[in-house]
Image (cartoon, rainbow, N blue to C red; front, side):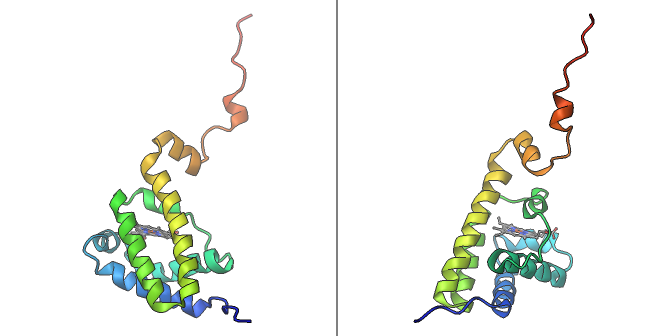
Length: 147
Ligand code: HEM
């Protein structure tokens, strides 16, 4: 049998390092990252945890990627560029079957992110991400009646 060996943490680390090396110098999306990321070592470590969680289900990443992007000046066209650079990097640094898998995951996450960040109304967005409003049971208390 010619089974592909599983992706390793080392490959994920290489993928993340190589991808952000491209991102940082990219004329289109580089400025968004360079303005927002204050500590690149911490960002790269976080993103390695994220991809390890997505690809190897290690559960090391505990954050909320959607929330992290709301305050960023992200335009729809940036997603295409992000995905192109990500696929290009994956093709360069991991085997073809792994590149396929990681690119598919990235596409799915990016599609969802794009939908929530750019297409939904603020109200919908708040419901999706910030479940801090009144509980349903509180919202639907019957109004006081003046009998
Ligand atoms: C339009 C394309 C994108 C841009 C411009 C972008 C930009 C950024 C920036 C600037 C940060 C750092 C925020 C900070 O340190 O304050 C960040 C964090 C992050 N991004 Fe993106 N991003 C994009 C798409 C994606 C996609 C498609 C994914 C996943 C497949 C992703 C996953 C993450 C994760 C996991 C974090 C860390 C969130 C946390 O703080 O927990 N991003 N992104």
